[in-house]
Image 1 (spheres, rainbow, N blue to C red):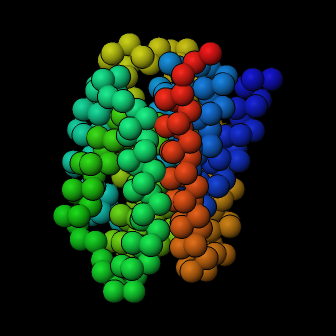
Image 2: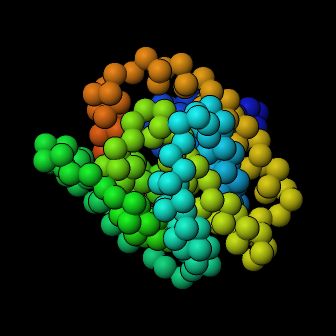
Length: 246
C-alpha cells in the first residue's frame, strides 16, 4: 500500500510538473518523508528527479535549446555537488524562507520584465546555474527558481520544458553521485527512488498532450500560480521544521 500511495501521488505530480515544468518534488516529498522518513527521502527524491527530468527531455527532445543548457549546466553541475556536501551544515529553514520570498517576489518581477521586454542572456544562465545548482544540492527542490530564468531567456511551452529538464538533469545527477559517495544513496534507497521516479516519468508523457493545447498566456499564468504555491510551501516547510518537537 505504501508503494501504491507513492506511485499515485508521483503520477499526479509528474503530470502537473510535466505541464508547468516544476512542482514534482514539492508534491512528492511530503509523501516520501511520511513513508520513508526524512533521512532517506532526500536521496530518494534526487533519484526520482533524475528520472523526471529525463522523461521531459525524451518527450520534447527536438525542442531542447542546447546552448542554453550548456551555459546553465557548466556552472550548475559542480555547484550542485558542492551544495550536496554542505547539506547538513546549513539551517535548512532559513534557506526555505529565502527561496520562498524569492519565488513570491518573482511573480510581479516577471510581469515587470515582460512589460519592459527585458530578456536574459547566456551569461545570465551561467550565473543562475551556479546559484541554483548550489541551492539544488542543499534543499529538496529548487525547480521553481529555474522557471523564471528560462522564461526570461525567451523559452516557452515545449522548448522551456525540454531545456529546463536537460539543464536540471546534470544537477540532480551530480547531487545523486555525491550522495552515493558519502553513503547516503544505498541500493535500497536507489530502488525506492526508481519506483517513485517511474511514476513521475509516466506523468510527463501524459502531460504532453495538455501542453500542446495550452495558449502561451495560460502557460505563463500557470507559471505564476506554481511559483506562488511553491513560495508559500517553502514558508510552511520552514515553520514546520523550526517548530519544537513534542
